Length: 178
Image (cartoon, rainbow, N blue to C red; front, side, top):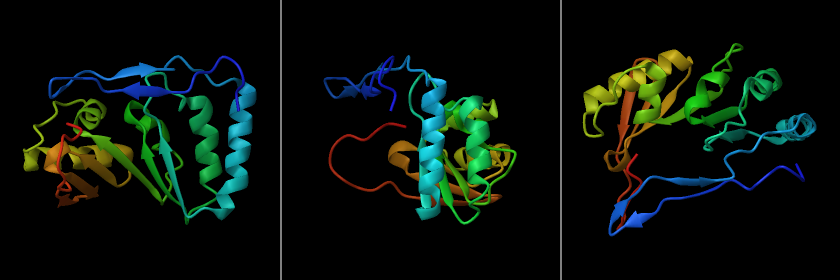
């Protein structure tokens, strides 16, 4: 672990009355030191033979998933074609799209993230056709299956031209709007 120049990434979503406000991030200026990057890759290399599933989550405003990490990470993951890898990495998703293209790679993006990636306007959550087209465009750009979240309207799972709508779970209380 990096013992200096590091803050634990934390965020909050304040609410005024019942309305969610913009997210506030803490620890967003972190930068991996070269020694930490090497230690992270070595720890992952040691763990990969035991894994069936890996989630790569990059939610912070200052990405750790830079080319310095993505390139050796893709090389490392290429040795495990059986591994299912889910990438939830916002704007950094494209850095893991390859090459090499990994057979077990899947991506998760929300409408706004996918629209930025595809350089188009984000359709409304309830616009099933517009969101399906966006999911297909994102999946094509990434060269991999894509899960597109639509807040209270549910999720779309897209593999190639096949799009499957999944309803949002029902539970009381507010939901994340994206």
